[in-house]
Amino acid sequence: MKTKIVPVNRGSYYALEERSFTENKTDPNDNQLVRIVAHGFVPYLMWRMEQRPALKSLFMATNKGVTPTKEELFSSYFDFMFLSFDIQPDLPYRPTDEELKSMFRPIHASKELEEFAALPDDLKQEHRGIFNEYMSWINPSLDQAGEERKLSRRAQAIYIILLDHAGKGNYKGEKMKVKGFASQEWGLTEGEAQSVYNALHPIQYDKLDEIKKDYPQDYDVALSLFNKDFPEQKPPSN
Image 1 (cartoon, rainbow, N blue to C red):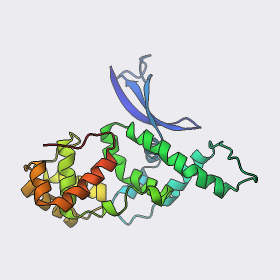
Image 2: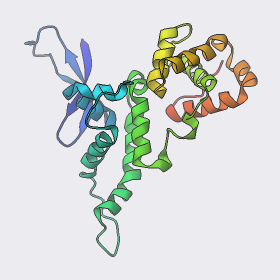
Image 3: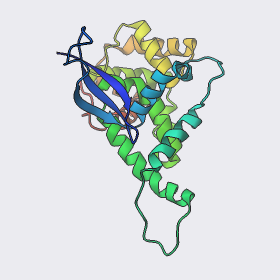
């Protein structure tokens, strides 16, 4: 049976659903729910992008005038989720909406991290950048795109090597794939993405122990970022 993963809006939540897929649209087995893959921000984002293809320009290095902005997109989803927040704190006064939102933010962030961890690896890779921005927007103290993401080109190259060793990608020798990933993940220009490939090329077949010995600072930064992005993954090894 063929299946496909589709984003859906169920009114009170957004989700990714795996559904059966047949060539014959009149087949009674077509479009049947197999499982719910995940809920949360990424399903919401994918659903919005299906409804409004112009949103895709938010992920491209263009100057196109697009609404909503990322902040408006983040705010609309956060407010949508806040409506389901029904925990009443034990306080001697009625908290304001802003106080309730402050209480909701860490709860919401924790749940979103769980939902993101449940995503298939390809969707994690595709949407990790915007998801980390959303996490940063929710609460700067939960920033997953902080100082560690200000990587040197060599640290970015080592991060890509770590992905290879962990089975999260296949970039060795693939110049266009490396540049495409660097552009998407870190918003780099063509020239900057080329610099990542230039840094990766001479070390791409080296053992991780050798890379760590030769470039300890860049390696530690790249590994720290990898561990944040894949907390469920064992650290890559030779």
